Image (tube, rainbow, N blue to C red; front, side, top):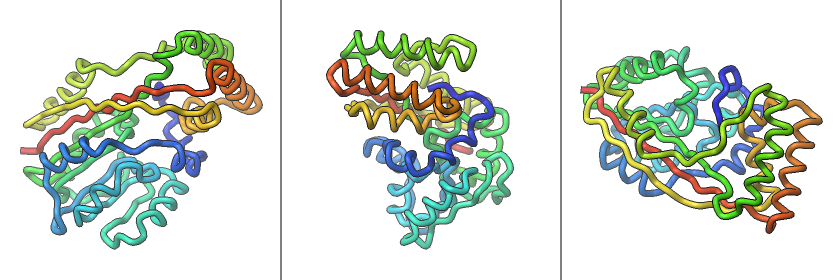
Length: 265
């Protein structure tokens, strides 16, 4: 789904649904990150935009300290409760852009489906500044692509988006497309412009099959859908649910997760 500037604060209004319906990340992704940047009980990591902690546990399980930055108060509260057993975990309720983070402190800075909300010219230099020399930045993001197997359902959903979403936003929605290796390579190259070296990237794939109810609940965690006013949003989601039920009752999402790794010299 597109990231519309100004909507980054909407997620906190759907924190409970976000925790329930947003997926985590593949084990292979964590193995690649921790192979690139091994962590132990002496290490310090920072997470940018923790949300409700979909990506956090594998890093805490290394024994390292994790300082998370999350602009949403409700999401921060969920994370404090969720990771209360880890004394090495803390969360600051602030945006990454304004959070007062110590310079040259962290062995790893990582961000899961959040860094795209931060302007490149702000985000990369700040990450660089808070990393130790030799420290690593891991940026990864999930890109779901719906309905490849069911073209009739896809066409029905496209008609609904034209009638509801496009009309509300006053523009035609960009048709969903699978995230490509070229896009991953271009995103990885951004880090070089800000002094990072040893740049790598990888793609990971999975599928999820959701019921009509679960898919509509997932849509309710996307910023551009959260921002649609009532009763328009409920009517829109109801029509989406009915379309899925009329075409077999489930929708398959093909997820592509792109990972970029970069190191501060």
